[in-house]
Each structure stands twice: as C-alpha cells, then as structure tokens.
Length: 498
Image (tube, rainbow, N blue to C red):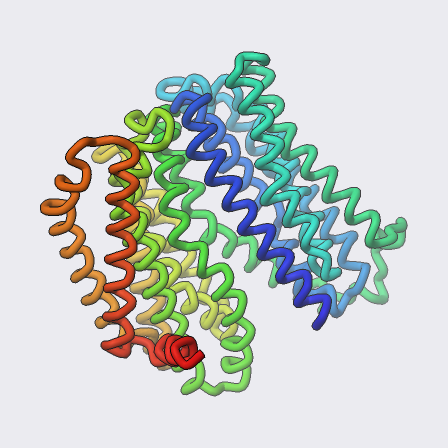
C-alpha cells in the first residue's frame, strides 16, 4: 500500500502540474503566437492521432491491467505485438482512404490537408507512448510516465511554440517538432520501462502449454469488448475531426480553446471516480444492490454539486478570461461552446458512475449497445448540427449524444438491476444553481457597471474576484443550511469545531 499511496500522490501532483502548465500555454502562448487556423491544425492532428491510436491498441491496455496478475511478464509480449498489428491495420486504412480524406479537408482546411501525411507517424508515437505507460503502471511505477505525458509533452511543445512564434523556424519545421514531441515522450517511456523491468525474447514466445484455448478465448473476448468501449471515452475527439472538415481549421482553433475551458468541469471526477470504482465494483460483485444504490447516488450527487459549481465559476468569469488572453476577441466566438460543452461535461461527470455499474455487472456486454448509440448519435448529430450552427452545433452534438446515452443507460439500470442514481438532493442542487445564476444576472446588470465604470484589466479583475467570492460564499452557506449533503455538512462542522 505504501508504494500505491506514494505513486498515487505523485501521479496526482503530475496531473495538477500538467493542468497548470497547460492553462498557461493554452491561454497565454498558443493564443499569442499561433493563428486560429494553426491552433486548429494542432488540435485536429492530436485528436485524430489519439483516436486512431486508441483503436490500434485493440483493447490491450485494459487487457494488460486485467490479466497481468494471471499472466505475469508474458502479458508484456502481447501488449507490444497486438498494438503493432492494430497500427498496421489502421495504417492500411489511412493509406487506402488518404486521397478522399485529403480531398475532404482541402476545401475548408487546406492547412490540415497539407500535413495529413504526418498522421500515421503521430499515431504510432501516441500509441506506443500509451503502451509503455500502461506497462509501467502495472508494475506500480506511474509517476515518471505521468510526468512525461502531462508535463514533458507540454514543455516540449512550448519550445516549438516559442521558436515558431519568434519566427526562428518555419511552419514545416514547427509541425515536425510538434509531432516529434510525442516521439520523444514515447522514447522516454521506453527507456524508463527498460530500467524497471528486464525484457528478454521469452516474453514474445508463444507457449502452447500456458496460452490454452480457454485463456485465448477469454483474453480475446475481453479485448474485443474494450476495443469497442474505448469509443465512448473519445467522443469529444470526433468533434474536432468533423469541424476541421466542415467548418475549417480556424473555427476548430476557436473551438479548441473553448473546449479546453469546458474540460475543467470534468477534472474532479478523475479523482472521485478512481476512488469510488473499486468500492462500487465490490458491492456489485457481492450483489449488495442497496449499497450500490447508496454509493452511486452519493457519487452522482457530489459530482453534480462540484461540477455545477466549477461550471458556474467559469461562466461568471468567462468574459474576464477572454479579455485577458492575447487575441481574446478572436476566440470570444467560443462562448457558446463553453456553455454547451460545460453542460455536457456536467452530465457526463455526474452520471458516468452508471457506466461503471453496468461494466461491473454480469450484463456488461450490453454496454456495446449503449456505446453504439452514443457513437452513432455523435457522428450523425455532428454531420447535421455543424451545418446549422457551426462550432456551437458540434458542442450541441456532444450534449445531445450524452443525453440520449444516459437516458437509455439509466433506464436500463433501473429496469434490469433496480439501480437509480436520482435523489431529491439533486433537485436541491439544481434549484440552488438556478438561484445563483439569477443572482449573477442581477449583479451583472446592477453592480458590474459601477465597479467597471472606468473599464480596465484592474477593474475587470476586481469585479470578477469580488463576484466569485460573494457568490461562492452565498452558495456554500445555502448548501450547508439546506443540508444538501450530510457528508459535506459533517466536514464543515469538524472544521468549525477545530
């Protein structure tokens, strides 16, 4: 447990350090030195590479984690060879459809079409960066790979941004350096893995005595399932690909900055989900459905409260944020994206625990149907809504897809397992949030003109800080007084007693 605790704490620190560095780079470097079209180019390239690399993994990352306790070092050979087969398959598809894809992007996003030939290489780097990271994680060594992913890549990219921003390199060299940062990250993860584990050719040997037909069937079934489920977690990646083709790279850049802001809403669930999943899995395994209902309602309630609060803080300060970032006026068209994607992230983080319940139950195979609904609705809605509403349409496609997905999933869980995530406390949260949003409208109409009578960065910052403190305090008092969360009340009572 000591190793797990240390690695978890260090991994969390790496995550938060990466978020901080990413915030500074995204809002004060990217927007200053890159045009909207160039931002869109980097976003589409990375999102496409991540999506294709997830498919090329063929579910082996999840299989490595699951079967390492059973297979030991033998699993390493599979984890290295199967993704290579997946990459070859994805590479063949990219080559086969290279002409139509380039033609698709050349109309609205010629810059993306010009660099499309780098996508297979970037996909390979992203694929094996993740593979080596997963192999290190099953050995309880996640800190260094986390630092490479969350901090290293951002620092490498920062160097490329600055070199290009000061016109020390050309756009061609910049794009190559940008892709090269993922190659460097892959190599760093490889060197670290070689330091902590001794590989020999035996890990690649097919042992007929060990790899029985039953084991191969079990591993293959689980791997196929995880290959399909990986799409559910990558729906946002689909958006930028559609936007690049239908709206252009410049608007994709505006969308990228806006969606980065909205993604902050979902950050707390990464920690809360990691803590709650093992407990929920144990309750499901034991068939203790009363406990499953209690746990899932608690997780859903607190995540709804936290995500809506973060979304509220972002929303009331959004104009100030756009006023401070370089070339903010060029990116202010993404306000609607922040609103719609922020709500989508609220739904996703509040109800994602339902997906875990289904995956841990004996009905886990039904998840494929819901994932198909989510994926197909996202593709169909992107095709339709981008033509109507542009970047707002892409965000709306994500929101509506999540609504359809969770409506179907929650209905199934209630009818099949009698698991319900809803509670009256959630209605209290929604009512309180509606009230503070109304108060913010009054503040903006009555007090903001007085505080910012002489508009400047100082007065804008003063208004944002004062509004956030007052509204935040009012919300905390209301949550405590109305006893929305007994757990939160107990924590506050302990603080008061101290």
